[in-house]
Every structure is written in C-alpha cells, then in structure tokens.
Amino acid sequence: MNFVEGALWDEAHAGTNAPGTALAVDHEVQIFAAEHYRHTVQAWTCAAAPIHDPATGRILGILDVTGGDAVAHPHSLALVRAAARLAEAHLATVRLAPVARAPAARLRVLGRPEGVLLLDGREIPLHGRHAEAMAILAAHPEGMTGQQLGAAMYDDRTAQGTLRVELLRLRRLVGPLLHSRPYRLAEPIAADFLDVAQALERGDVAAAVDAYAGPLLPTSDAPAVVERRRRLEVEVRSAVLAATDPAILHAYASDAGFDDLAVWERLAHLAPQHRAVVSRVTELRAEYGLNSDATLM
Image (cartoon, rainbow, N blue to C red; front, side, top):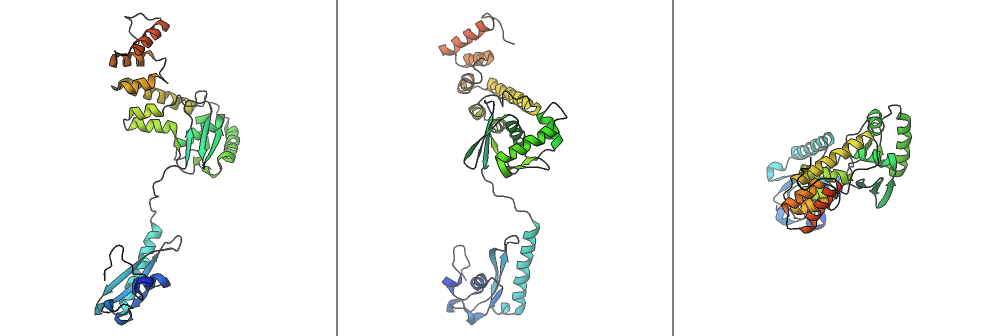
C-alpha cells in the first residue's frame, strides 16, 4: 500500500481510498476492493476514521485499517470509529506541553534607577513602584498574593491600598500581561537580572559578567528588590574573584568593579605584566590609605 512518510493518499492524488476519502468528507468510511479508484490497490479493503482536536475540531489525522478479505466486514468500520473516538477522548483529558518559545517580553532593570519593558515591539518606561513590581513578579512566575507582594514592595504593612492603585496603573501600561488572584505575569518574561542569575547557576561567569550592567534598581528601597540586589552583587563578585581567566576579571573591573581593590589585586596576580592593572592597584591602595604591605580584608 506504500503507507509511508511522504506518500500522497488524498483523493486529489490517489482517487477514492479510505484514508483520503475520510479526510475529504470528514467522516469514517469503508472502501471495499473494487471501489478503489486505482486498480493496483483493488485487492485491499480499508476502513478509516478522522481524529479531531477536541478543542478546535480540526482534523489531526486519519486512523486506518487495511487488509485482505478479513477487513471486508462492518466490524472493521466500527473498530476504527471507536478507536478514533477513544483517541479524541484521551486528547481531551491530557494537557499537552506547550511548545517552548522565547519570552514575548523582556525587562531591563540592571544599572538603572527605573526599568524598561520591551513588549510587542514597544519600549515601555517603568517608573518607581512599577519597575519594582515587574521585577518581583518576573522572579516569581508562580504568582503572589496581595499580602506577599505588598510585603515585598513596602515596609509598611498598611500599604495594601497603595499597592492596588499602583497595580491598576501598571496594568494600564502592560495590559493583559499582568494578572491578579494571584498577582502574576500571564507568561514568563526575560529579564536582565534573571539572565545573570541563570548564567551563574550554569557556571558561565563570563556570560554573567557580560549581562551584569550594574545593581538591580539601585535607588529602590523595596525589601525584595534590596535583598535580591545585594544577593546578586555578592554572587557575581564572588564568582569573579574565584575566576582564573584574566579576561573575566578585567571585564568586571572595568565596569562594576572599577573601585573594587580585591578584584584589581586578583587581576594583578593573574596578569602581573599589565602595568595599567598594577597602577590601578596602587591608586586604590592609596585611596584606601593602605601601604604596599597591607592586606585587604
């Protein structure tokens, strides 16, 4: 029968046959021997039934039984019909895993006092509490209750009314991306601070340093932001100090670690031939009032 991948058995190419005709009429059919259009397959009898997507009704495929005289029986048609309905019933009860795709939105909150959300080709400025809320919710894709989010954003437990107002204003900016009950983002979004954390988790210090544009919302006093900002700073710095690649230390020292004597000294240890590095160590030691023999704690 040549039922192989790539074979064309629709009616336009093969004429009357059970799979092709079932596809054309969207109904189960049984085609007996001589009823086939092509004489080369008239020795066979086939019964076929379509399988539909329970949610949309779209045809997903055709279930077919093909054989000799034993298939030329009404029970064959009943068999494929029942099997197709069972397949549809199973599809209705299982939740198919979503196809992995890149996040539709990206949040930038590193090294800047206010955030920017890239959404549907737009750059949406996020001021103050809006940037904090988006960063906190991006880090909690499972969602948060109003009480949890309020505690994450405010020291004052009586600020729930303020929180609701801020989230209403935020929803006007980001639309259906923001859900409630619990407060959450409709889908996971990419974020620069999450990129850094993920790079550190997989041991890619170079990528973490490259993505680390500075402290997380450096002027924010939201408790959850302050805690994550400090933790990220410590984790990045610790990973850099443990690195053995001078390029990683130089990239960090040239930006976030420009005034970090320990980082420059580590770099000088790995690359003592670089005069600019040694000179920077000398400058920082002088600024900190340390002599050449002092040990930095």
